[in-house]
Image (cartoon, rainbow, N blue to C red; front, side, top):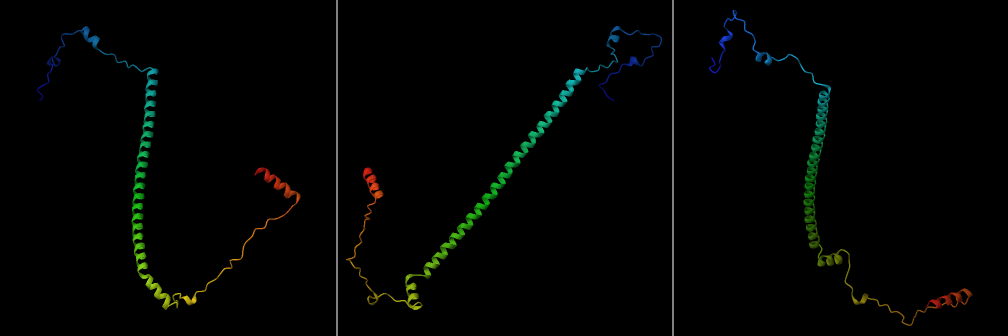
Length: 170
């Protein structure tokens, strides 16, 4: 049983012998059972609000799709950048390995072909020998020969006109 409730026991008493008249205050308090319908202007405003909400929903969906697209583009760019960085790192490592192989082969080549070994191979395998004075042949040039430039002595009319024009400009 609840202790905080109060009951009006006078409602349960039998009052059949006395007819009570309603109080004027109670009559004023009674509500009408009339339903007021909204007018057309209010309905139009509600429809406009619904359309405005639809536009906002579409606009927010577009903004969300754009933000997701930008974010995914950024992530894709970062993934491509990291893959390229890994590829560059691998290429640099391969380059350093090839440079060390090149240096190793160059040192090996230099060690195999010293000047004394080359000279020995030339004498033993190819039959070459050093130059001595008996093999030398000297060639003398004739110093009396001279070169001379001959000028043409064309005394034609056009040659004279040409030489006259050249003399004017010099």
